[in-house]
Amino acid sequence: MSVVPHTTEETDASPEPISPSLRRVQGIASTALDRTKDATANALTASRQAWTKAAEVKRQAQRSLVAQRVATLADKTAAQTRQATAAAVVASRLGFARAAKLGRETVLPELGRASAKVRERTRPERLKQDWREFLLKWHANVGDKGIEKLSFTPTQAPVALEALTVKGPNRAHGHDYKPTPKLVFDWALAGVPEDFSKFSFVDYGAGKGRVMLLASQHPFTAVGGIEFAVELHDDATMNIAQFPRSRMKCRNVECVLEDAAALGPLDTQAIHYFFDAFSSQVFGEVLAGIIAAYREHPRRLYLILIGQEGGELAEESGVFKRIDLPVAERLRAKLFSPYEIAVYRSLA
Image (tube, rainbow, N blue to C red; front, side, top):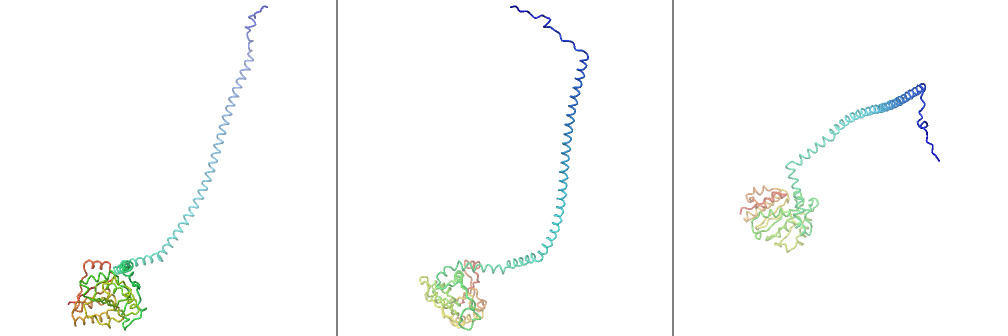
């Protein structure tokens, strides 16, 4: 089998030439296509620009609408603010007026009363009175607990004179019952620099017997009390009878129901004790009896006056001279005694 090779003419055939008319047509078509592309691109660009502008216009419109709403709201808020401000101004004026009226009618008078109270409370006399009331409470609740526990009938509570049955004509000159604070009694007795075993002790206005019980714990030869109120005398008698004998250094203790002005003084060396017992008139009568007995029989006598009216009568008697308490007791009494303590000694 033989292979017949292709001829050169078949493999190297040349394309047919393009005519000028066809080239012109192709050029026109190419130009038209380019123009169409350009037009399309321009149209797209214009469309995008139009959409962009439309969106911007829409945004501006929305912004304008929001601005209008904001402006409307601002105007409304401003109006409300003006109204609120005006109302606040009116209210403040009314408030100031009411406050001024309230101040004139209530606050200023109250301030005046408070100021008066402060002035009253800070007066030296009032401060002294408040301190005295504090001391009375302190003595009652602290200093007197020991003796009160030993009393069969309580001695601490005060008793009005009008509630008592009185012996003798001197009810008008008597005072309400109140007990002597124990520490005050101790400080006063310290002003007597003597051997108590040589002295008798007499309590004028003995009350419920507290001072007699305190005195019985010292070695006096005798302890006597004079009381003109029946009920108080009975309480004193009961307290003496029930007091622990182991605490008594003097067991010769007796309370007498009598008017002090009607009872003569003891004819022995004695300490005469007065704790706000009665008026200066009755004290003068009792003191006159003591002085008369002294002049008949001169001897060492003492007067202890605690809150008692008529102390000047003792100083003017020419028989008694006031003596000072020891330094320690004098200082304690000055600071912590609710009553003035005065001790007098006879000249003999």
